[in-house]
Each structure stands twice: as structure tokens, then as C-alpha cells.
Length: 403
Image 1: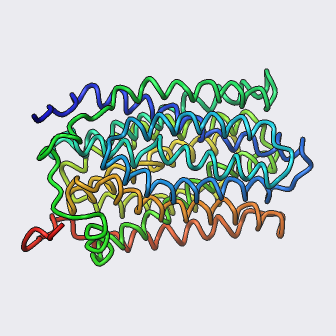
Image 2: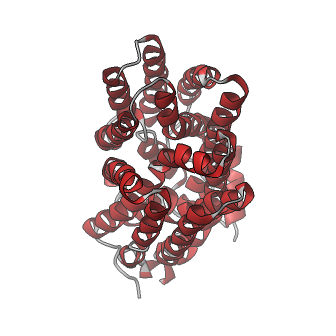
Image 3: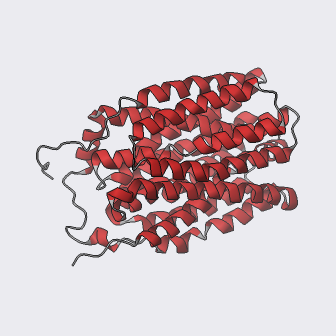
């Protein structure tokens, strides 16, 4: 007996709420950099290293979370991820050793994010939303993550100022558990029904096909740059602004503006993905990021210039996510979408590792973030160029491969 796909409304409401919580919590981690390092007597490199490990763990575990979600459905993966997320936040609050802090903040929270964010949610969307609405639906889910940033970052800043940084993390640990009941709405009985999801390839065959396909490699290269830029800015910009004499609330408002404008940016990118080549959307986003950073560095640094930069970057922030994942679905189909999206995202997280770690390392060595800003500009130009040759047409398979 075959089961009907989940309703579009159910997928979007539950998926968007999960991404709102999961991404909303993580987007505010930069606000903890100075309170934690000052309280523990650490340099910024220790905090940056833990955040770098988090991004790397998120990407690496995301591959396997995607495999499990593709085969057995997303519910178990998301629910377990929520429990792990809560555990990691509690450990982040009470760790007093840099290596223990890196374990909880890096490995454990990164593992949790792998099971509660885009790769798993987009797999559900790909399997339950028709192709002619898929890019749009992915844009809605990404916009939800951006709304989570807009909603959660000011709340996290308020919690830190009113309750202290440790108590704030304990409160977020309780909030993360709200993901469990939301995950119930993404149960997919269809995955256990024979014939419901056509699998003409094994996991190994799907991976071999993807990694031999040049467009997959180019999408991975572009996503590396995306991770480098957004995580460097998200984690280190609050300290960059404070170093230049701006009030702490400027950073909170800046991160919130990024989240607010990214609601529009991701939705627009997802909608445009139904009407124009996704590679052109991606090239434009990466090029525009480089231009925005150049203008930001050249202009006088004031609260107004910070807010303008944040609004522009917000439009470009996670707007790469819907066209990238929709392109993967369009090229390779949806049978192994969460897994292939996981590999693409792993490249993103290697970039994130480099951006957040280099930010802390080079600041401690040089007393400045300038070198990393220049790298972010150059990489944006590189990503714009490598996305242009991507071929989005469905891959032609001459015959079904033997299982």
C-alpha cells in the first residue's frame, strides 16, 4: 500500500519552525565570544577554534544524517538532533577547559545541527513537494531560518544582558527541545512503502555519479566560499565592531538585520530559481557579496554604515541555499537528495571552519581582521566565476544501474 506525500502546508510549517529554532540559536553564538573569553581568560582563538570544529562537525555528520533521513525518514534524525543540541548547549554553558568547551560547542552542537537544519529538511521538501514548486518551497524554509536569526539574536542578546551568559545558554537548551514535537509533523510513512521512492542507484553509485560530474564539483567549490564568508562575518563581526568603538547593541541589531533581510533574500532566490538559471542567481549573489564588503571597508565605520551593510548582506546571506539545493535535485533527482546536499554542505562547512578559525587566529597574530576581509572579497569573485559553467539539466542515465 502506498502512502500519500505529506501536505505542502504541513511540510512548510513544521520544517520552517524547526529551522527557525535551530538556525536562530546558532546565529547568535557570536554574541558569546567576548563574555566567554573574558570570563574564562581565553583568547579569541580558543572560541574561534570551537566554532570552527562546530561547523566542520555539522558538515561531516550531515552526510550521514542525510543518508539515514533518505532511507528511514527525517523524524528520528531531527528528534535525536534536538536532544543532542540541548545537551551541547548545557555543556557550552558549564565547560571551563578549552578542550571540553570545544567538545560540547564544537563536536556535540555541530552534530545536533546536522540533524536539525537544511540538508535533512530539504530532503523532506524534495520528496514531498512537486518539482515545479520545489525551489520556491526551499526558499520558504531558508527564509524561516533567516527569520529565526532576526527573532532569536536580539532575544539572545537580551538574555545575556539580563540573566548572564551561562543562564542564557541553559534557557536556549530548553528551547531546543521544542524541535522534538515539531519533528513529529515530518514523519514520512511513504519511505517504508515499496515503490513510493524510486531508487535505481545504491548510495555508492549515487556518490560515484555525483563526484564524477563537474557541475557537482563546481557547486561544492562555490558553497565552500559561502561558508567562509557568512560564518566569519556572523561570528567575528560583533567583536570587529566593538574593537572599533561601537556599542554592543550595534552588533546585535546588525545580526538581526542580516536575519530580517535574509528572509526576503532567500525567498526571492527560491522564487527566481523557478524562472531563471540557478547558476546565474548564484554567480550574482557571490559577486554582490564581494562588492558589499569592499564598500563596507572603504566607507567610514558608523552605526548607519553597519546597518546598511547588514541589510545588503542579509539579502545575500543564505540566498545561496535554495538555488544550490534545487540545482542538485534538478540534476540528480530526489532519491538521494539529503545525502548529496549533505556533501555539498560539508564543503560549505570546511569553508566555515576556515573563515571562523582564521578570523580568530589572524586577529590574535596581527591584531586585525583585515587579511580575512580581503580573503572574503577574493573568494567571492572566485565563487561567482565557478558557478557560471554549471549545467543544471537532469543527468542522463542510459539504463538503471544494478542494485
